[in-house]
Image 1 (cartoon, protein in one colour):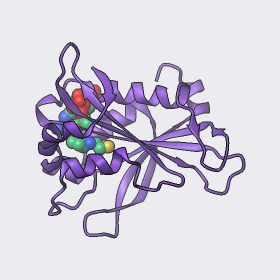
Image 2 (cartoon, helix red, strand yellow):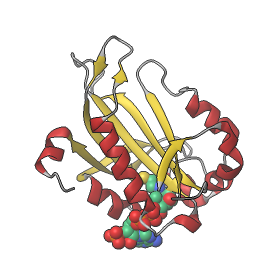
Image 3 (cartoon, helix red, strand yellow):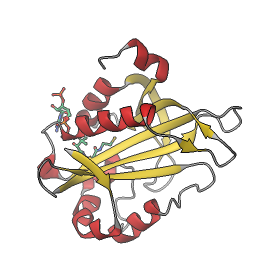
Length: 191
Ligand SMILES: CC(C)(COP(=O)(O)OP(=O)(O)OC[C@H]1O[C@@H](n2cnc3c(N)ncnc32)[C@H](O)[C@@H]1OP(=O)(O)O)[C@@H](O)C(=O)NCCC(=O)NCCS
């Protein structure tokens, strides 16, 4: 499994993944909303979410020795606390795979690699000046998502529940939160 940047040319392969009800539920996307892969890619690649203090990195998960795009890992960087000086960053990870590529451990390996990259190799230029350290890597999943829950529990530390924004008709939804701070990572080097 390797990672590469996504481009708008991946839209055709991605469209069925975005149409998958399991992916829509996990990403808390509106089940009825038509999500066009080319538009979605354009918006994430152009960082249109919160251009002033959030960055979104999107990677394709590519199977070893092939050019098969099996899924997507997203890393959303935000400040832990907008007012903290100096700023400390938080990276939220999310992932989805095409159904035929699930159950082979690809997602766990991809997220572990991205988690390490966030702590060790990622320098984010803070729009307010300088670069800020990565304080914590976090992720969340729905309580009913057994595969994700088990995978995240091995990579990060469970943090209880959180009310997360739902993009499915608005409002919030209860999600399980996971996280790993830099200090926790030092304490559990084998994690
Ligand atoms: C969640 C997802 C990314 C996991 O990908 P994957 O490559 O299949 O994950 P793995 O093979 O590493 O399996 C992860 C764990 O889930 C378990 N698992 C897999 N499918 C499962 C299922 N249907 N029910 C319960 N557990 C399941 C595996 O046994 C494994 O646990 P273990 O290592 O303790 O045995 C994938 O199922 C997916 O894309 N789902 C739809 C989108 C989604 O839910 N994304 C997560 C949002 S955070």
